Length: 361
Image 1 (cartoon, rainbow, N blue to C red):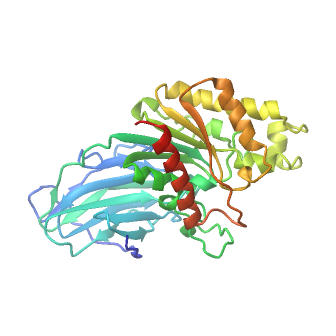
Image 2: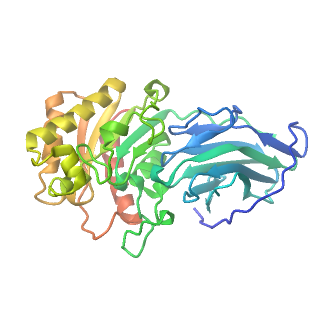
Image 3: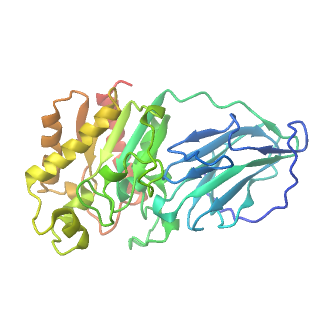
């Protein structure tokens, strides 16, 4: 794919709603729009995007297309994918405004997709619709994908700092890109609909931040404990869990405030860790009775030679005695930073190979 950078700017807007006129306004509720991910539809005039990997897609005819967005922080980035070929980077603004996605398009059908690169700690983005200009026409949705996959993970799965070639793991969100993560790569390989429930620093028993995955995995809006996701809306055939990396470091820091909050003054033993992981996977099974669940780990130091953590995962899975819950550990890749673009590709290759050999879906 070709990569470019698109600069956002405001457009004056003439609101005309007839589909046979020069300009076409597409409301967020229009059935021609395809959404993927845990999309917040609680507002009547917009939809909210919080989770990395959430996407909006539309097929259309017209010379140009713009999107009406408002971002809470101005610190989120989206890949804009035109005709499944060129990728542009869009940074929504904190004021509600139209931003051009593509212009001077050729006659005939086109596809545009917005894919959220960034994590939910950067705040939500509200989507208010599209504006298509010049002989505008909406086309039917693409055929529904036959496969569905979902990932639960931390910064590795999120694609944190994946594009930071300095190796410094800079926190600036421009360097994070969920599209380049092993999770998104795997999903595209299988042409699967993709959900990603992840957050940098999160763990099963303890996190670098206040929330642990068992407290947020069932939320629609991750920062709102009362906002619950309806699991019946999305039943994946494959669920991949890549968690425990952050637990490995924090259980060795008894003076860290999150350690104290979760464990008091006692270091958790193997039985505690195994049981916590086992309970989380059992909870996922309750929501997904037919899914194949892959309990993974890696490729950072949780899977380095001598690590006990893959063994904890294996014991938890063995205890569940479920023939459709598997383990697959991603090979350890020594590094001073989070996985690079190439390392993410390596992880995807390993996971893809395992799924192809193991799961019939």
